[in-house]
Image 1 (cartoon, rainbow, N blue to C red):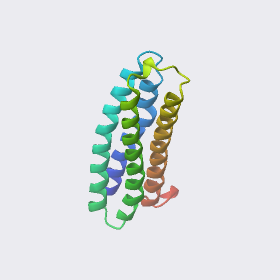
Image 2: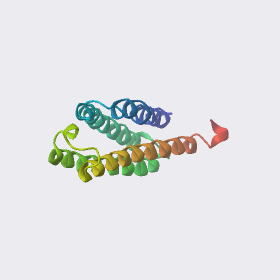
Image 3: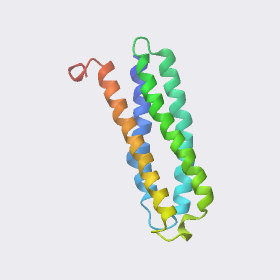
Image 4: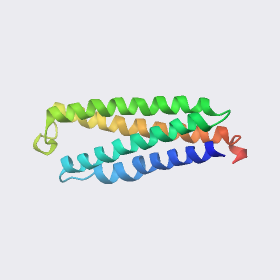
Length: 140
């Protein structure tokens, strides 16, 4: 029971980041620098919460604790990419002052999209894990 609750919290947080926060903040045409700053702050807070949830899942889920490992691996991959993006952003400075087609800005944009896709993959994986621990599609 606790494993389903923790997994539901994790999935809900991922859903909010991928389908609500990212599209709203990152699709703005004005002040992308400010929007990216707020998104980064939210994302790093999410990482702390998500890792705490997954550690609790690992510790408290009885026979299903093995599923915490791929979820943690996916989250760790996203954190590593976010660290790289953070360093790249420091070298870029204010993104609004760089031409849209500048190679560094294009690289930053593509990596940001990749980061969101990895979060989406983590969301999809967490759904599959939830279905598995619930006894399959018929067990829902």
